[in-house]
Image (cartoon, rainbow, N blue to C red; front, side, top):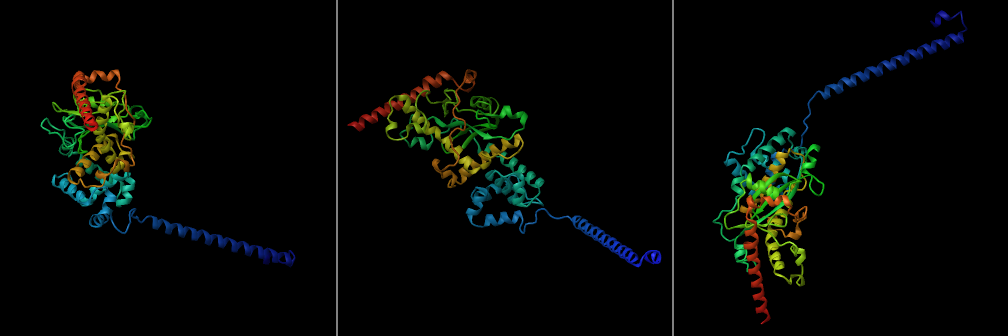
Length: 424
């Protein structure tokens, strides 16, 4: 084109046009090469992304980690699963021998149990367990529920109500402060609120008096700190007496003839449930120090002895919460699973206490517990509606006039005799 212009326009102008055309061609070639390089890079990236990459690619598997823990130092497995290693093996063998657990192609029974124990003792979610054990979400949730059902199936064997033939507990018999006055006591009952994760439409039903959502759990324990009855799954708004009524009518809860449980102010006083006297000092803090242990009236002496014995249920709750963090930080499960987890924690508590009583948590002092063992929501006064339950739970008159009154009178007489002997 520049040659065509020569002779028509001056040479300087023709050189300018020729240079401009060359620059334009060079620029177009550069743009074309850049676009080709981008297309090649995109194609290469697509090829790489089409290759599946494993999500869990840790150098060692969950099974290898569990095997290493159980064969290593006892404290390592204890920190991870909150149960002694020998208790872990014994529980696993029990579940396998009953056909409740079995090795599969994907996972051995050891790891299945480890997933469950890690989840409830450290309050870990399914996703946290996935990362810890290097398994998919579906695999972890499936085996968690398999182990949960297996342990819950042991409830009739490991949580047993006492019978009429039960003898006076050695702890009572060996202590003159309690024997023979409370010789027919077989344990203590209390309610405890366990956090519950519920949908918004259920918030009102599960909201307790503190405003949080929870399930109200009724528990009866022996003086060995063993659960003898657990009623879980009740809405947080339910009163202790309502939960007890359901336990009696539908849950199979029975008190042997001639025996009774100790209860606090949240329950009515009957011949089967012996409560403290209202309007008088009751709690440990009320009797702290030597001067405060001077009883001005017989009801105070009775309440103090009652509180000392009833404290076993609060101690048990404290041990329970220390070991199983899921009881204070419940992850998101269905309501049925949440109720079953509470029951499973009680079953495991009894299993460890029955066969491995040297366990650290069972020997904790109450002052060492991070989670208070007192009733989470304080005492609830028995309302008029609850008075209708007396006939189903026990005879109110007998509980008031016979059992409690006779215990109080005998305690006061023994105390007075002891004081006279000291003054001589």
